[in-house]
Image 1 (cartoon, rainbow, N blue to C red):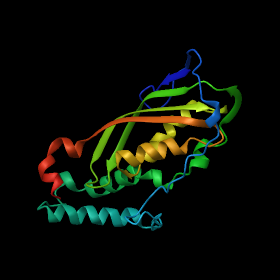
Image 2: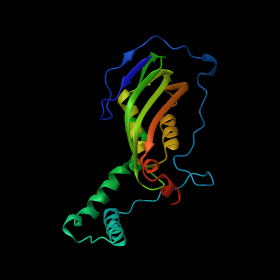
Image 3: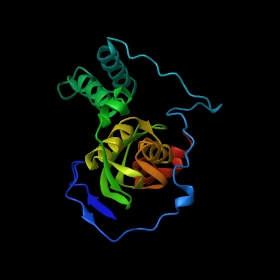
Length: 211
């Protein structure tokens, strides 16, 4: 078994190898159904909305409108640059929509003849709850049993990062990370454990539930 821990910036340290883990060879190669990245209430894949060229300007104006509608003065000194800062922050925190899994892995799959479990622990997770667009954070632990081939350890942390930089719910994020492990790398046994607490639920649970 190979175990690695994230170093806190979603990189990985040198792995530690433990005794072999027995696998059920009768199920090796069984495929996990692929589900869409984004779903509608009808269960169909939603078409992503194209990002306009003037997205930063539109977001900046939207934040300015929001400030006005909560009774603030966006022209006072402390808020003059806030709309621009928030717009840039939102583009960064949702940058996972513009990333490709194929480009992220970039061919970092290696034929090592390895069939012991690989586990990367304590990957930092920071995402936005899609219901209120407020942050939630925690740790992710990703494990898979290779089918002779392995993927670069750092790629597992980057996969978590890519999917967390979207509007998310914890359950979907966990599934997306699990299904992103390349089919040719893992056997039928794979698992993602994700521990995260939504700030939304921890602050004003009764009021937030009514929104």
